[in-house]
Length: 388
Image (cartoon, rainbow, N blue to C red; front, side, top):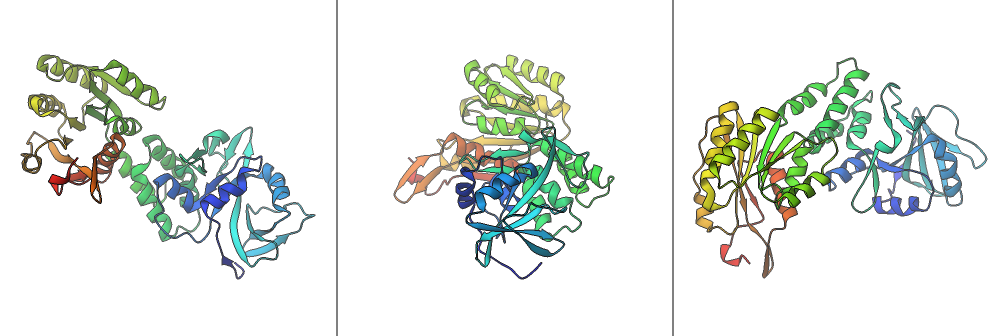
């Protein structure tokens, strides 16, 4: 590419610039993946926005007064004069201030047909246009991560940063997103692509049937996260709370309510057996069980182990417990069980402290599952005398 320097606009500056333009757009490239991940993970040399080709004249009209555009094609930048329309096959335009010397952002153009996005490298791969983007809590639109990863993996040259992007994003993608990426890359490359084995191993490693005890209250965020990746059975007593969780779940999620008091051993056994018959063996358990009901964990584990030769148990220990009791809780030994312990602490801010929020607890549990921590402390447990 011709000599260039970048003075890239920030995500917020791009959002401010595009807000007043009456077209659909979204952040693309590495920044899109970081927006989905929730934080910036590496330095970005530039920033891309994605629009439909048919919307380009509208965008150009709004930019003409202050900016100049260059078509990027085969390593050559050609200025797009004010009177010219975009021609040729290039789908990339670079933008800078008029008479400026630094590039500010890149425009990527996509083709659509009958309100469907068309993947330029294989026009059989399509998605409804209204399903290719997502929005941050702050209102910034970005391309869905599985589509951006397809653009990266589908390129003729896969860079090391692309491999790292895949490695980082796979743990946070939903099951259907991972499967879509796998099938799309497989179709484009006739089943032969360097990423397919990695993606397939991730699919195989996802839980098939998860059981959550206490999944409608402080663990509701973890319940919804798991429901995007597996079948989920939730032990609960409050039907209103259960209904709220189910209503928040994606339409294609599979959540089975198990209304039972886990102190009722006979009823608990019956519910666990019934959900195993309905949804298959359980391979992941998250257990938030009060200390006066320790027998419930033994009952659940016994029933799970009968049908599952290998399974994981994430045992959540409450922060209201004695610190020594938390640290010295015996590791449970159940047949085929990989025992994991999650310790709930508190947040210490200078001289003040507070208990964890439900979101912080769920986020910590999600992190423990994603990265398979044997012991995960959410917040801090020391110094214990500083707890609220």
